[in-house]
Length: 192
Image 1 (tube, helix red, strand yellow):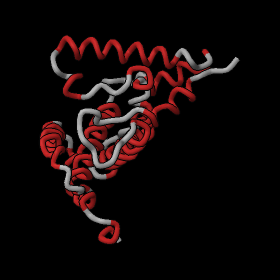
Image 2: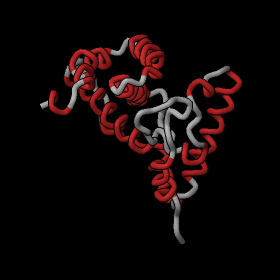
Image 3: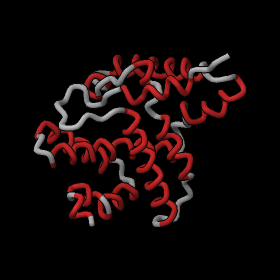
């Protein structure tokens, strides 16, 4: 018998983000998830090494790797639609839950419980909170990239995402902004 889980997740590279926006460079959910994993890991390490926390950096990164995988079933619903009202948000959360269940059913039974921990993470955990912050941080960096290329379409998104990140009151985010965010505006030669 052949199982389809990894073939499904491999299709993440075909799901485009930012569908309602004109983009200088397209982004898919696979590359986005990789960036979110790096940022979630970084935020967890910052939490532990700078602020004396005890976040599981591996768990935060793993949550990020799988955080969009249900979209191979649902597609990427743009944020303005997803959060238009409570009714749509609730219905979409149920759809995401069902998509995750469907995806997990494509694994052998003996593996499901292990993958379920990442595909359907503990939303009350600090690692999940770090991953969600990293997800927004990735969106913020996308806005910076687009704006650097002269695409003013991302001006409003940048502002609202920055406000959202600051409203989280997470010292890891502040640290990331203070120490890393400015370098995203640099050219390759300037990074050297």
